[in-house]
Image (cartoon, rainbow, N blue to C red; front, side, top):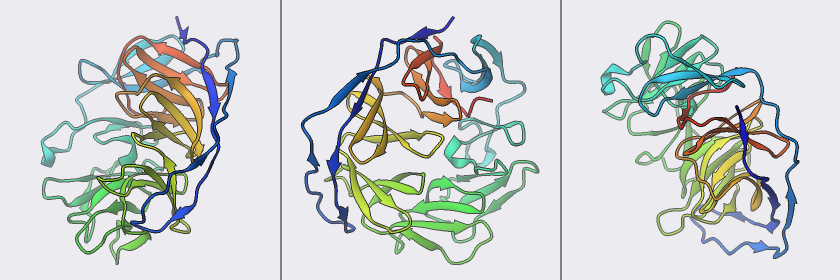
Length: 300
């Protein structure tokens, strides 16, 4: 049986923000003092019919069949990366129908490859179908931020500050976003970063123009993206969907998930201590199961 949380608030804040030069100090945002709060619809959400891959609190992986909540343990041994010590984490790759030993951000959008960094800090790409492992040329020392079909987004390497793109096939690294920031996430045509340890304000960097805009005051962490690439941000006292700088649509007030949020065509799958929940576009958050666990892929 599903359980719906108390009515949530859809909260919108407006702000005026200006682009920042790399490393420039962040002025305080101009923000309206008035906010409108609208109660979410009273009608309960009808859950979709699909299978959600999750990590079990006792270890291992399984599928939760929605809407029944029935649990189906994954068959076979856990997927692993032998050269970094075996089990790491799991994501279900629907494109090829198998588990892979990385987080969702490390799996290419088409599901054909995944990337990881070994103990020598060399990035490698794995063909999911064949299992063939190939070092990415010139990748030693880079930090993996996101995986594309033809390469990886990386940052922080001596002499190469900023956000860069490395192709699986090799070639010169291509800088896609400016130096001066510490990048943490990428989605929807934007990178998300902070300036440094002395200013942890979350910034949004446009990958087309390289312009950086103040996005959210600290503490703020990008925990995932919805199906359109809009970031889900964990703040001090809530989990919010942020379609624009300082514009907040509260998903779960007073909560900060212990793991990543995964978006798909059904909505946002959220792991909480009280169980796994689905936030749908109508503003409702409905419990799928009382079992706590990590989200390990989209629900299909």
